[in-house]
Amino acid sequence: MSAPDLDEAEIEASRAPLMDHLIELRGRLLICVIAFILGFILCFAFAEPLYIFLVKPFAVAAAFHQSLAPGTHVSPIDLILGTAGLKALPIVDGQMVKLIYTAPLEILFTKMKLAGFGAFIVSFPILAWQMYRFVAPGLYRNEKGAFLPFLFAAPLLFLLGTALVYFVMLPFVMWFSLSQQIAGGGVSAELLPKVSDYLSLVTALLLAFGLCFQLPVVMTLLGLAGIVNSKMMAQGRRYAIVAVVVVAAVVTPPDPVSQLMLAVPLVLLYEISIWCVRLIELGKRRRDPVEGHP
Image (cartoon, rainbow, N blue to C red; front, side, top):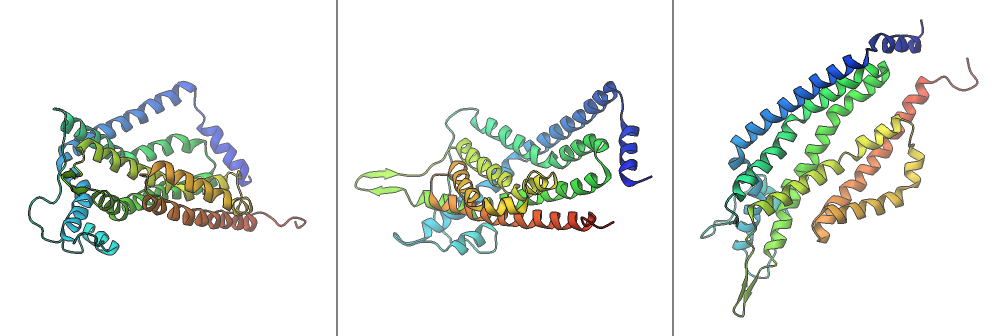
């Protein structure tokens, strides 16, 4: 029996009545809900240290900003190393960073929002695995082998995007915001962000970068499905760059530094996607018989 016949036999053997599929779906959804709830409880218990961890880039930017003479600029390397804990922060008098809240329950709701965001990240491997286990019986053997690597690549690329936000982008954004303060002539405009607004900014940037860094995964899957090819992607490079610039302008704060920090990696990831699709096409040519030969 040939390989396609074996694959068809596997799928026929795995077919079950609709009720069995619904029961399986209910069980897997229940596992996902339990995983999310446990992740939420865990993250809510550590909401305060988690929030302090997210505020660290702001604290680093504030420390360097307060230690510099007026009109001088901080080194980008110092901001990155300071956030990573590889460089001692300048010692300044008084509190380095201060956030405020203006509603009685704002802190509680902020912690709940942070716990929900953290629960999604913590439980994502379980969610992805349950989704894969549900659809796997309907996949051919070669499709299962092609799909599994993306279960590992997607979280790694997401972490890479969030690391770029935390260690590089956030310190720059906060330092830039601090440099816009006004003091003089009887006027004082000091940056005192609300705890909820700061968390909204951080989570929006983390999600935006993490999802945008899935570009190679999405394009490679489209290449596997035959929807796109490397020649089409190479010819559409200029349009892709325009789309990347538009996306970067929409999902980042309205400053050119933040937009470049997202646009440049996305362009590089698009080029990587082209090479990934080319490798897939080379693999298909090697597996398929050469046209005109037995």
